[in-house]
Length: 159
Ligand SMILES: C[C@H](O)[C@H](O)[C@H]1CNC2=NC(N)=NC(=O)C2=N1
Image 1 (cartoon, rainbow, N blue to C red):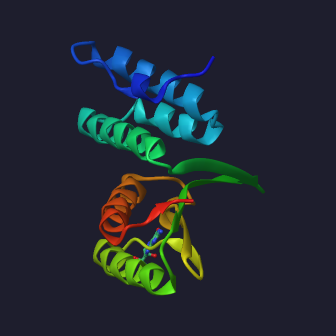
Image 2: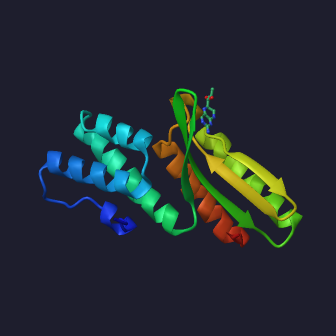
Image 3: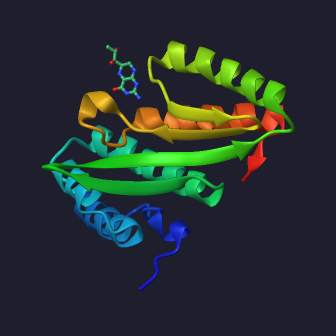
């Protein structure tokens, strides 16, 4: 069954355990990821504040995927790498490099850095949190949103 991204919004007014379960099951249905659903399961035992943060990230993640970002999961020995990635195409190299310079400043400020490549007018970006064993965290979502804002100003488009 395909789960529409908007169904990841967790209903207000439901008891917290129900909201946790709903978030967990909808999210895992959407991404088919054992790793992320493990993360969400562990979230079920965390504080309400942590739950709210996670729910906010999940909602933002949904809005990022609606704007061309992709979630991916690559299994390797003993662990899986989660990535949030997107490719932008600019008018020319100069525009692409200007965009990368602005993103670099934000990445330094957040102390969170992209994995990226540039070929002429294209920039491919993959985000993950190395310190968390290559899991996605709220920092990846935050950086992706800042990148989107910069790309909007720079005239970056979806490739
Ligand atoms: C030591 C330093 O603070 C850390 O390695 C920071 C730097 N930038 C980072 N960037 C990313 N993408 N993931 C991290 O875990 C990370 N950690």
